[in-house]
Length: 405
Image (cartoon, rainbow, N blue to C red):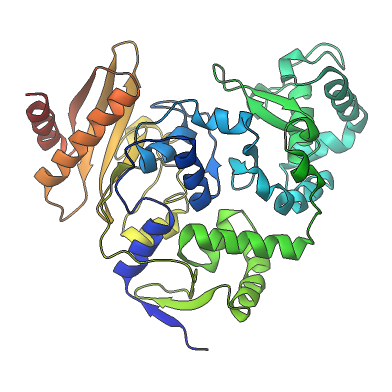
C-alpha cells in the first residue's frame, strides 16, 4: 500500500484544524461551543497549577476566547463530562467511559497505577472496602469528610496524603468511585459512578480490551489529524507496543491512511476525515497542558519549537521563566510568554517575552498585545504589565502602550 505524502506545512495545518485552532474564535461561547471543543480534542487535562488560571480552563480559552469560567464544571453537572486518568487526570465526554474500563480493570489488579497506591490497596484492602462502604451509605464525600478508619494521619510522602486519600485515589483509578471538583478549592469529591454518570453509560456493555484500545487510537487520530504511532499512543496513554499492531488493523480497515510527512523520521497515520485549510487564522496563547503541544516530540516535529515547562526547574537554571506559554500566530508558534495573574494588584504580569528566530517582532508584539489584553479582561484584571526580560519585551511594551492610547 502506497503511503500518502504530505508536506510539513500541510501536516501542521491539518494538526491545527483537527485541534480546533485553525479558525478565528467564535463570537459567543455557549455550551454548544464547549461541546464542539470536546468533539475535536476529546479530553482536556486537569491540573492544579493556578499561576494564571486553572490549567484546564486554558484549552477553552485558546479555542473560544472569553467563556464562562464555570463551563467545565457545568459540563460535569450536566453529566456530559467526567474525570478520569485518560491522558493524565482529564475531563472526558461520558460516552468514552466504556472505552476506559480496561484501564480500571488493570488498576483493580494493581497494574497501570502508581506503585505506592497499588501496594497500599493490596495491603489495606479491608480499609479500602470500608472507605467504599462509607461513600455508598453517606453519599459524595471528600477525603477530609470521611469518618471510616479513625483519625487521618498524613504521610510524609505522596504530597502528605492521608491513608483515606490514598484509598480514595485507588478506588477512583479502579473505577469503583468517580469524582467531581469543588470550584473554590479544586478538591475532589468522590461518589459512586452510578450516582454521577448517566444510566445509559453505566448500562453500556464493556468492549473487549483490544476493541476499546483500537477505538481510542482512532479517536486520537481524529483529534490529532496526522500523527505518528507514538503520538497516537500517547494521547490516551496506550503502550506503543500495544498500539502499533492496532494501528495497522485500522489502516487495513480503511479507518486510517498510512502517510509520509516531509521531515518526519517515523511513518504517520492520517485521519480520513482530516482537512487541510489553505491558511490558519489563529492568534492564541497555548497552555503547557494543551493537547496541541503536550507531547513535546510532536511539538518539536510540527512547529520546530523546543519546549519545556520550567516550573520544576530551579530559578537560576530557567531559560524563559516559571510559567511560560507559547503564542500561536497563524500556523506557527512564534513566541514564549512568561505569565502570572497578580490578582491582588488586578494585573496580568508578563515578566518575560521571547520571540522565536526569524519572526517579525513588531507584528508578533501587536498580535500578542491584543491577546494579553483580551485575556486580562476575561480574568477580571484591569491591566497588563510587561517586564523587561526577553528579546520581545520592548516591542510588547510599545504595542501595549499603543493599544491603551
